[in-house]
Length: 202
Image (tube, rainbow, N blue to C red):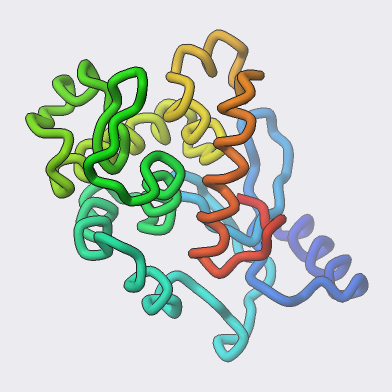
């Protein structure tokens, strides 16, 4: 791994792509994957370290997160479930546009649009209570992140279409028009709140 990462570092320096932390990990198929985002549940080796003065991280973006509605409730749920607050905010924005009283035609309710059966399973008695809804939605999203090996795109797709819709297709985003719109929308907002480029890897 050391020889490989040294070679990768040299290549990136030659191409001028040294503007952020870069990590490398080996996926389940033995392939080496580069990323500038340290995803939870992965073992990475940092091959490029961005200077502190140039870095934009979640810790340095409190103003953007703090300006979002229900910021304290989201922050608490994110910490409890070991999720990025930015991801919860992105899902809430897509699901309800922060309308705690929202109800979908299919019966999903509240900020994170929990279906009645899902809410009961998660122990959420009142889906229109913001704190209970956010905590329940965060628990559900964490479950999906674990199910899909911390793949944010698949977890978000499963949040929208249901985990079986993703699993039954071999772990790809389902071809439903709504889900195909939903996933990019959530990821775009997630990246924005994280201070990442629109095409940054996740």
